[in-house]
Length: 424
Ligand SMILES: Cc1ncc(COP(=O)(O)O)c(C=O)c1O
Image: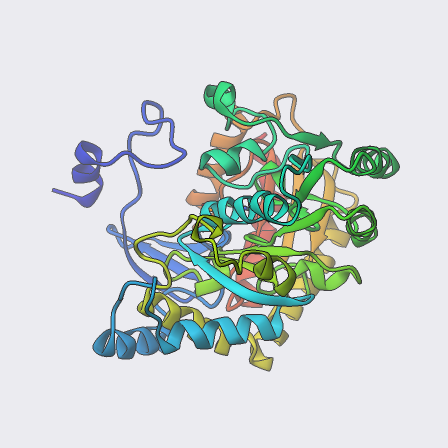
């Protein structure tokens, strides 16, 4: 029996309306920017398998480093114990992260990196100011920070959170700084932080991924950060998607002068190989938790914290990311996106053409632009039929390719995007 048919009997897939899409494509091999299914069909992974893959699938160097690690130590408890791959990864991340990060806390994925960040920020104020009134959290309209309850609470209220809304904690949302609404968003933040009861403000810097690759300028991010600084509000930068070169700089926060207090990482952290979350924080926040009283420690940890094989994958991915060949590839992708967008200017089938670094997005002009519109399903199938894995967000078409993607692969994607107006 095919893997596809066996899957149908036993698996419940994420973000899948199981009645409408009972079947999954069974992938048997990954190589570079391509995936191969059990029938031998090849797909260009234009979205880096949910934005995680940086250097391509089954990369020889990462394979080798993980394999070496597995022969030495696969995993051990990370409370009271440590190991070199975790320490080395932390040292290297602290070296390249923006701002004055002083400590690395490991967890399992992007959602848990956000949970940890929220818990750190909430408890920080309780430790620094017992009985504190700094309890409020600010987030951005349309945000997506993950699927655990804290992460959902700070995410925009939407179809993603509807079923759980009665159990989410209250958050103040800033209007999204869409063109023409930047000042409104900044003024809302200012009015809120001035009250002195805000613990932290969390944002996806420069690009809101799941919202639909909504982009906003570095100047706005700078103003958010500066206001938070001025009013002693902690800044949490969720770089789960934007981290590791996606936005043209190593981290999106590198594009502003002010710095966050906490940074969340995942996805590209391991080159997309294995799940891992990182919550990086400043010495100032860490120091607040250095207490004689054990009840004041951070009550958080996961069984697989800092898994040694995963740390090896992350260290190997960093080796590749920091190589100048990878930088040249990222620049090539960003340049090609720019050229493509300028060639699209006169094409009336798309609007809101946008790009930040290697991320390219546009809206297909259609009457129905909801997340589950039939446009999305038609476009998804159209791309698959053309050998491209691309999951539209409603009517939003975007690509965020692995950095090993070639110019001719990009041409194929651009051509397919251009020609898709034929089917609508
Ligand atoms: C900005 C951001 N934060 C957090 C998450 C959650 O990450 P994960 O799916 O690894 O839990 C995502 C996932 O798409 C994300 O884009």
